[in-house]
Length: 110
Ligand SMILES: N[C@@H](CCC(=O)N[C@@H](CS)C(=O)NCC(=O)O)C(=O)O
Image 1 (cartoon, protein in one colour):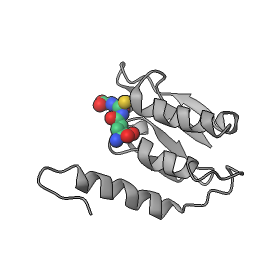
Image 2: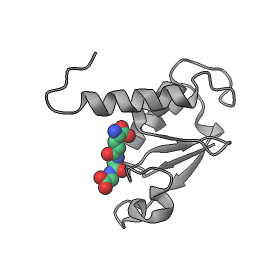
Image 3: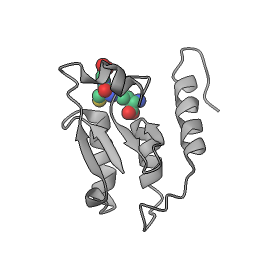
Image 4: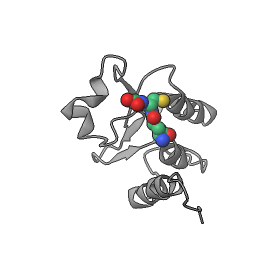
């Protein structure tokens, strides 16, 4: 599993903190994305996350989970084996869409 991130930025930091709290930092490969240089806007990265932002979690099957909220939802429930993630990718995607809708002005989150 890979985490695309940029050390020192707040959203990737949330994921790093969650992984560290669970003792899972060694279980993922961190891939540095040079955000200040615009690497996150190149087609190769936008193919992973159309929002062109870090962090992104890439599962071993190639599934991409973008956004610190959804990634930490994977890390958070206290699973013992990171390879057997309990939350399906669809549910993580649902979380992301819910967050995007809730962030729109005038929309009340349910
Ligand atoms: N809601 C996203 C926000 C991701 C985000 O904005 N990441 C910033 C770094 S903290 C980024 O990649 N920004 C690139 C840009 O805005 O061009 C999350 O929680 O991960």
